Length: 107
Image 1 (cartoon, rainbow, N blue to C red):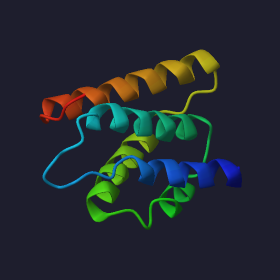
Image 2 (image 1 turned 120 degrees about the vertical axis):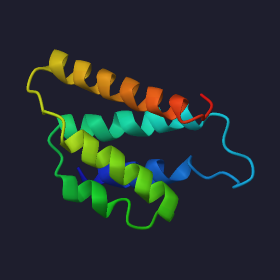
Image 3 (image 1 turned 90 degrees about the vertical axis):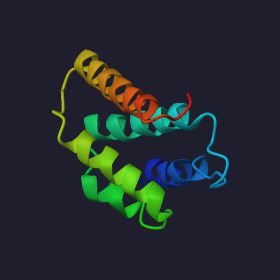
């Protein structure tokens, strides 16, 4: 479990780096990848505090986005069947991707 959370920490913080004047052209795609991991961890029963421990040192703007994703994920029902977990993850990722596109970011 610790190994997974270490990888999560590196992955959550790694690909969101972009220049303020040049928004990452793949921002929504990157965001949806992060969202998928967060929701998969939620569906696997990982404690919410573990996720917050892993985003403590990220930049404030990114931290705010990740905070909103984590809150949304943990307000979503946790399922026990694999099929329902996969469906919940897919719907969650799609909802966040659409919100990103509606906000004017590129895919």
